Length: 301
Image 1 (cartoon, rainbow, N blue to C red):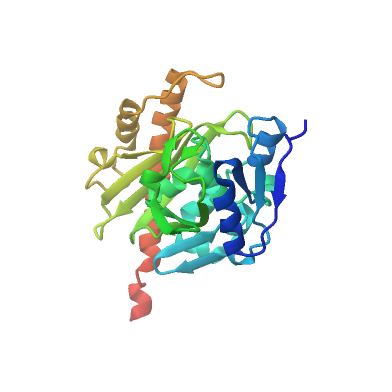
Image 2 (image 1 turned 120 degrees about the horizontal axis):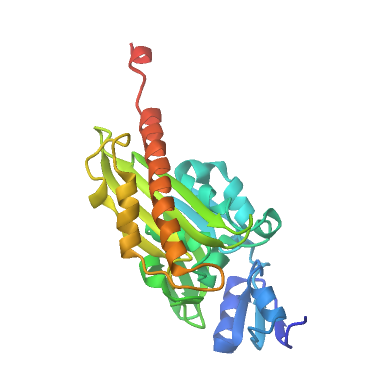
């Protein structure tokens, strides 16, 4: 299949890109990795009159790590972010989620920010951004604003971005010290969208007791859904915490729908099982993170 006719723009500066975007308004569409947009065009599920290719904006192809977290530019490919050792050390959940995104050939071209903007509730990266409480930096010819993940998504494949705005950077904040994370999902085939996926975060206090437990879900709601599950495991050491109870709690708070891939009941069952599994793995990672951060008393003497 072939896409419908469109006008192609290839700006070489951010200012030029914003000018074109402002002039074309709702009739313009940004092209970065194109791993979601091009299939939509070819199937004629999208028909923008103008395609604005930002791949010449080299300043957007970056991954920066500092004390606050990881900043991912709009042209940073999934594969680059996944392979970035500093980013993985700062926020292991980034690599954990990116390894589950489609197939390597798609990760080599697709962009992390593009996935976030595409707003697919079955995609991994929106769940990661939501769980970490991250944000997107948006720019237009009229100014700049930062939108928190909690305010970004308004429906399936729908975000709060205005027609004249370009997402230039995603901000993933570092979790608190003593935090472990995990990402688990079930798909019909490797690389397919998950029937259910769970990104989990567990933080331990100095006494190695659970102080925070949250999970984000994909393919379970119209937007990435984050649940605070601390009440099921609060104050317990990881080896005695009842993560199965946290799974049951999550199941009671989720309301999935039937579709051609799975029934709502099956998705709810998967959410319960995967929640317990992901939280348990995250707690084990938290124990390891705390152990790595504490000096060896024998070496200290």
